[in-house]
Length: 397
Image (tube, rainbow, N blue to C red; front, top):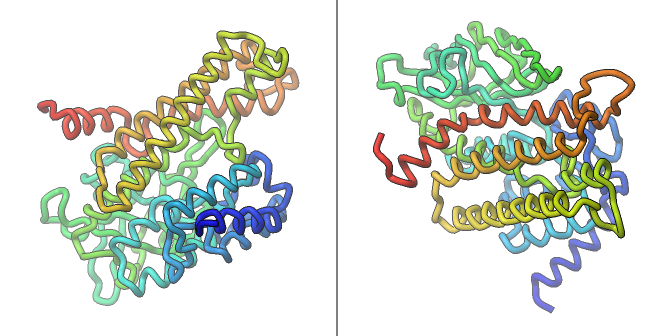
């Protein structure tokens, strides 16, 4: 038996013994685990599952063990994902720290900072939010004006951020600030981490047309940030910002292929079965069946392409432009999925409130509306197309 076969056998046995049965179902939105000080454990099994996975280092399987990870190889990580999929296991922890900040810290932080922050991220002890966009600097991120003034032992931060997802629920923020007002736009920017409970930090949720308020405007009024919380070099934060944006765009692009059994949201084939009908175990309408099959094939091809690109990056052959391609495609794939769902639901897709529509129907309609924001967050689709046209296709400005 090969080492990988032995690892699969051990992993399968461990998951069977340690994954609670209620964690082998699709994840309702209210049971998504973000971790942090404010986490509410709607399902007690969620806490058990996260803690068991964190103890194994499997909330971040590829991170080094000294930073709270599992230290798995690429092949072992693939086996783990396959075995989790086999039992329909939920992801134990959703985290901007895992998807975005952690990879940036692994690359740019000091050893002391890595040892301090990364294990806490892996254990789900800190929930992070991102302080990038500002009211006057959205797509033009480098035009940010939030300032951090050197006060000797600390920086004094003043300014505001907007579209800071879940800032009102977050414990800490990773934040771009201007530390040199005389430098060129892309210079003079630094990357800071600080506690959202620091004096002078306030948040104001932004209610969306969907009825939810995942975004906030965040204000900084003379916030004191210790200099030890600076990541990388002073005035060199734009380099970190660009790398983190690549991770963010890959994270957002992943929603386009989110058909895993343990994933969040509604699956296209489930809607087809419920509203189109089933004959002999198959979706009854052959045209809808073909549409669903094509969508799933595109999902799979997209997932495999992202996986291949990820392995190439870990092997030292990263292509930063792929993040823009993946973000754009993932956005369109997710929007197409919800458009198809509403077509299948017919008049049951027009409900917003009321007893004539089920919670699932209302939720799907709101998810459809929410999917439109994928074209904006993490860099607009127009920005991604500009990047692709200039840096991939070599087209002139």
